[in-house]
Image (cartoon, rainbow, N blue to C red; front, side, top):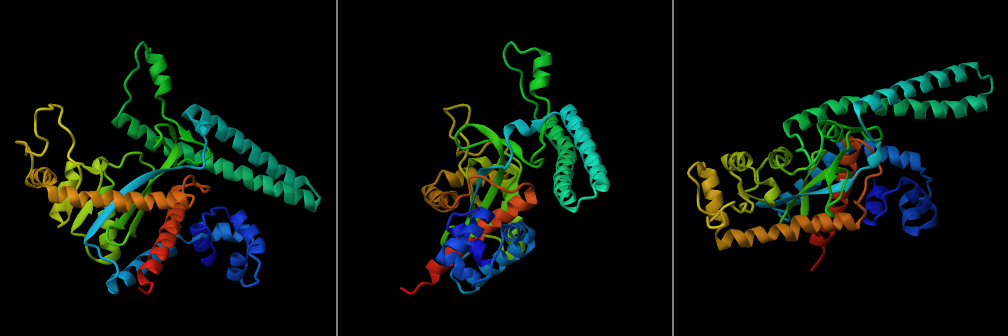
Length: 362
């Protein structure tokens, strides 16, 4: 754990690189205490202990809350799209995935037959490694077919419009659902630079007074809509209290979520969308607004709310930028569970450095 925490702060995200550093770098050698650690052990430990990492995050923040060094009065939430360990060419249609699955099954059966017929132990070991790789590919393709059903449901809810001069056949082929045979749970998302690539949506909730990360979540949904209630519930479950104020950008401002948060005692600060009619004041309540939405509109038009909302960029976006600077630009693991484990490592490393700063003598 010490190795991974130090490596995360140091911007090292590769288990093989850490193994090299344990022999070449004094700090890493000191942490090991003269014990050799191979990259397989490091890689397995990194993602196999996600429940433990989640508990450590809760416990570490709870300790800081108990000491009065961190408060949950005001929390900012922000998401960032992090590139997945999959290429755009790995996204395939159902028919192609079925062909890939048949090929993978045939390869597994052929390799098993070779291993049974081969009398040489060394060759058997090499072929056994090849068999494991083929079986893993078969499992990934099978999982991609399962994930394709989820993608099809999302496509039906929000179908893509036809392009100009596009035929029905061309439109159907362009919009046909696809899933990655490399990382089935990854989704193509719009990135910060405007491009579209396979990615995951990492969500951090940060206490505005100390930049302490108090909540971590990862989804394969490209939009931030609907991400507010799960994070609010997570913080309540972790620490037994709900923040009084919650700061998010306009991507989270869904009326149902604002009303739900307000009903549970949390005031949401999010910018009000500009109306289609430029002459209408966006901060004036509408006739069909609920009490919570009307209050939200009026609240965000005041100077006090604007001052509070400015803290979001200085906390949530700052924490995301620090994570980027430490190497959280592309995942080297695959699947939601492993990706969340990596996100937890970044949260723990960040909080460790913040704890050092908060507890340092004046």
